[in-house]
Amino acid sequence: MARFNKMQVLKAVSSTGMVPVYYHQDAEIAKKVLKACYEGGVRAFEFTNRGDFAQEVFGDLIKFSAKECPDMILGIGSIVDAGTASLYLQMGANFIVGPLFNPEIAKVCNRRLVPYIPGCGTVSEIGFAQEAGCDVCKIFPAGCVGGPSFVSNIKAPMPWSMIMATGAVEPTKENLSEWFKAGVTCVGMGSKLFPNEAIRQENWQMITGLCREALSYIQESRG
Image 1 (cartoon, rainbow, N blue to C red):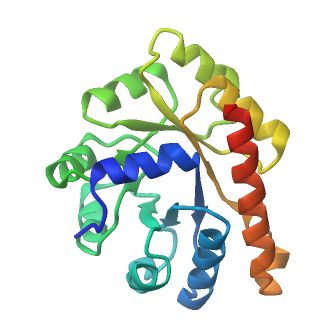
Image 2: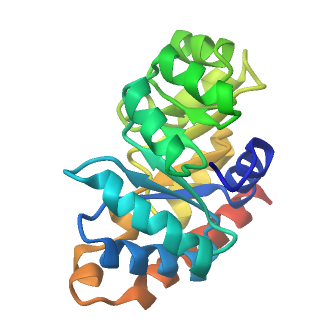
């Protein structure tokens, strides 16, 4: 059972404006990364379903989070079918993210009032996802489907849209400013927040610093 209700999840995602996206097969490393992000001010985190036994790592991570990062809202990403969504909801996922929009996942999430953030590449897909009850839609891959200009063009006729940009997002002042001025609600960010060198050297302070810096740029962009 998710520890946070739908409104708490949506508030955390929109107020912080950034959802780190991460996967590692080693649960201990995943825990260190989660904690580093938490210490940097992150309050919503997406672990991705990208490797064998990812659900076992997620199970360890969500228990760790409840004790060590009590305000962290932990979700699961790379979900493409309803069965996998159900598995992770049973394990306590607070939100579900996917690279595509699957109406069957929307039904599973709506039944439990858990946010589903689907990947969309067109205005019609965003419209269909909203019709299915998706409050936040992920444009993905954001850099390929039109970048910040795609967001501002969506917001013109559909100003109610809550957009998460994932792909081609970097933790720099220039890049984040562009996305937020275009009107995104939040961004999803992966490898740029987790340099291989930092993981290899177990330099968790570097990750904390990158998160803190990115969040400050987001706040600045919002004025």
